[in-house]
Image (cartoon, rainbow, N blue to C red; front, side, top):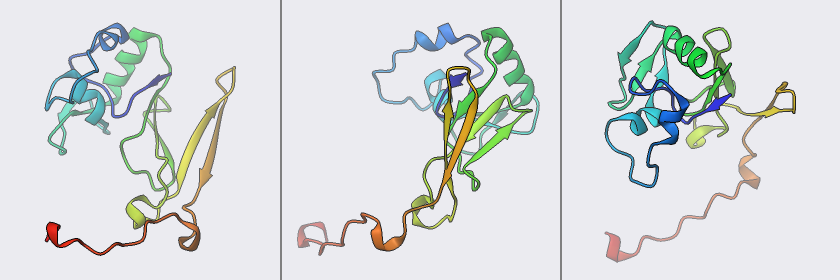
Length: 148
């Protein structure tokens, strides 16, 4: 299982290439590191332009090649809101897990956690947002004149 925030990059074919990326830097506006953070799976073939303005859209053929080259079964990612908490793509070769319930206090989505046992058996836990009256939402403070 390969875990990544966003997805794949057309500049990367092996996990060793990812290991060689200097991650102690600001995220660049383009390139492999940017792609790993901002790319998304799409029901298409090949690579596509991402509407986000960063990263790429990638299809099932890209995933199939990457997984085969690197001897992995699943790419596990987050990065996209999933109303049901998790979503499989491309015949269970890519999994999106979203773990922020009621995103931005307005989306009404549930969240999920994926647990794997020592045999990589999967178990999903689905949860809802905490009720409004028990949430730790900070109280609004008066705006200081300095910021006006």
